[in-house]
Image (tube, rainbow, N blue to C red; front, top):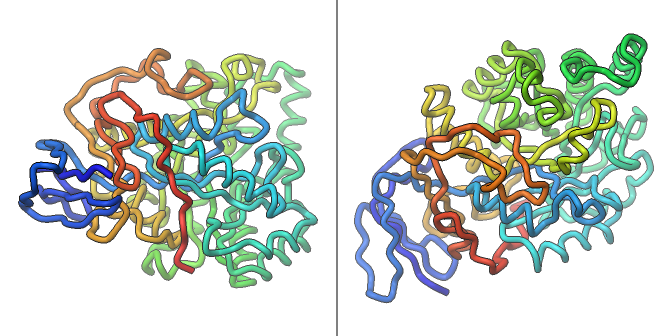
Length: 445
């Protein structure tokens, strides 16, 4: 394997930024120092003026394989991920068939072992009737259990209180939840169908999938976690009100209840439905400016622990349908980090905090083994970012299989120039190295 020396980069790690050299040997970071001298056979990358950060660990993606590969697949979406500086991902179980047995779950790992450009893990999915299968999940090499408390693809809505209580009280694995109250959503939808029929304007999406729907479900899940002692992680918090449910008075490693926010809820607001329409239709919905401000506040004061993408591609044809027929979700992995660096340029967040929330904290939260830091002895999962590089997102430069991005037309001032995965230079200056070097994530549990 080629050995690399990254020279003179602004290395960001554990809250500090230091101009340093980073030596990569045999897939690992072997030295971080102010100046490193090496033999002639080591490939040198000059990172002067650029940030050198641990690759993002995206704890929530939908890469659509198996069963929905017309939208995306593990190969296409992990290619886009490494172009966006994401070196590890945790994929969700609502593929087809749903990953609700150990056999189906393991089949996904087998696919990724030959196709993924990035490191990977897959969540085991819970249903109303698969507790026995859930309890077979190996904590060493599976990220956790995913429960949908609001409607989802296939038979994955867990809506029986007795089942939820049994799951929460029976496993020590991390339980990640999509928290939206189904009853509230159905009642809101019925009201707008009565007014508009099947032709509901998309701007009502955040009112149908309302603040109340989110808060009711999140608060119930947290109440149940406190009652049972379960390890709960609430995915894609989308309202300011929900942020009040989380605490910041203890270190992340000691938290039993944690929260995630996604880049689209930090970037867009309900004002964007007029121009973006279904292309920013997500579940939970993009909500008000006040909600976005509340999410930023909770992220910065550590009530929200991690930033993710909830990358969920659909075809242009599917997204171009009327509101009721258009699916929710959108592609985000290629543009997540650069959107955060744009927010940093705007003064909303420091680069050190971006690294904390996208790399360090997912590693702590999921107990990922030897990833998430630019530290000696850790896997060399690294992104290099040029923060003085203007470019515009267009259909021509997106790598998603679906061929579009909600960020189209947006100019960014930062660009990922290099991405290392396990010490392998997987992406360099707009070119993907077509060798699949992703490894299965392991967890220290």
